Length: 118
Image (cartoon, rainbow, N blue to C red; front, side, top):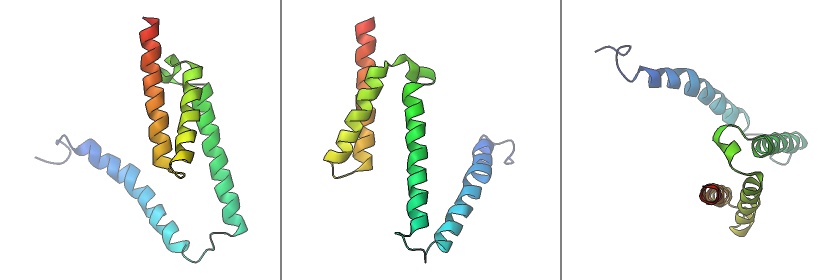
């Protein structure tokens, strides 16, 4: 059985085209960034831009929700963000806790809204 007739060929293509090219750049960045001061002005600026872009993407997902997320009311989506941020702060700035709490509130709120509607 050859690789092209195997059921695994889509995963091999995904790894070759999606994962490996990104991994090369990650390792190159890791090797080149060893001597850079973390508090340097350029890295503070890069971190600020990355945070702003992430905040914009999250805001777009909240206010202009695509697909199934559009069926969840805006109030539930906003409450999930507030709950996630509160969880982030409550668990000593844990990103995992913030995401888990926000996601749980979003899912439970969506189920509760669905039950109330029908």
